[in-house]
Image (cartoon, rainbow, N blue to C red):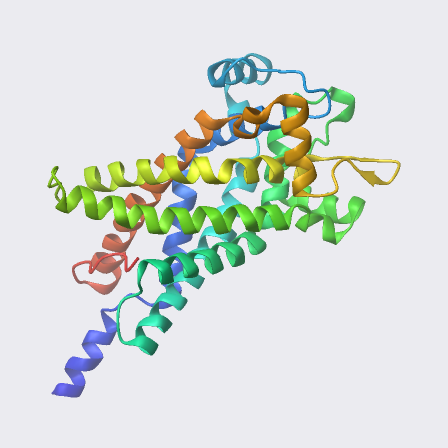
Length: 317
């Protein structure tokens, strides 16, 4: 009888593999909504590259320009690469973090401290970013293609065509171009996001506002966490975008590395240019975090209800 009950309990637990799958699906669902802001952020970051000339007045001018030149669907240019990035980066990041989190609890017999969570976030972010860099490279190129002169456009048909052509025309290692700044950004993002989100959530729940657990609490905490994460990670995101979109002249790259990008941008375009595209980046990062968690909770509930035939026990994150 006890053995039968134990088997039933095991049956009703969410399989580890499904945690990764549902995490990736949640990230992809959120990306479908915020992709226009990501494209605008990318366009604003690469505007002025080389010449230092300001191409867009603000976020709304950039969005208006894209729609007028490329049509409404131009805002979703590179959506295939964006979804592939979520399928690789988000799944890997959540998988590694969950594994490290569980290993910590088993080894130390207690919940991870804030410092430990930050450390695990750094490792998970680096691993996820490395796996997701090829999709990131394809995404940056596809999102920026529409602003180039017709003769210079790469005209990738889709994300798989982009990956194939990049490998054939520029070599396999090009798929990991900008992997170091990408990983650096992901490490900062995950460290800032995981630690600050937890602290903001605790403050709103136990502080003067006394907010109850739910979507409102998650929204408030994630938006403030997104603001902090945006401020700390934007310069690295700028460097990543410029390096991944650079072209080679006479076999020489436009930039030698992250520090050169940051120095050149600050020198030619002004120090605040390192935060160019701040509004769409923040508007993307905050809602994307909120939507990812909301979708994840809903997907978990549906899996428990329709597959396991029981009530949801939460996302486990």
